[in-house]
Amino acid sequence: MTTKNSPVSALKVQARKIAALLKAAERGDKIDARYAEKIAAARAKGAFKVGIAMDDKIVIVEIPWASIRETEETALVEYILNLMRERTADQ
Image (cartoon, rainbow, N blue to C red; front, top):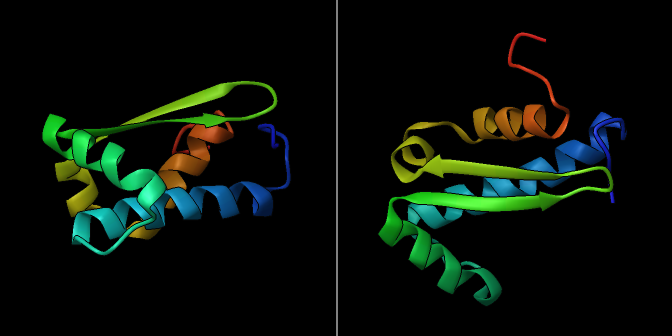
């Protein structure tokens, strides 16, 4: 598990996995069966919501599918990473 003070490289690995999953689901790529049903339900609701369990907290990420579609994967990684590190985009 990680904390907000974990090495940025470790946090980026987690953020990249989440962002890659979101972009793959948005493109309609085949995704891991463990997530497929929940992602289909999230698409029907119009937003994706996930909890990231860390040692010191749980980060809740909720992103509308329109934002996922319009946002580059690298920007999603940075957004998720900032949430995990409790930072704003300008810090």
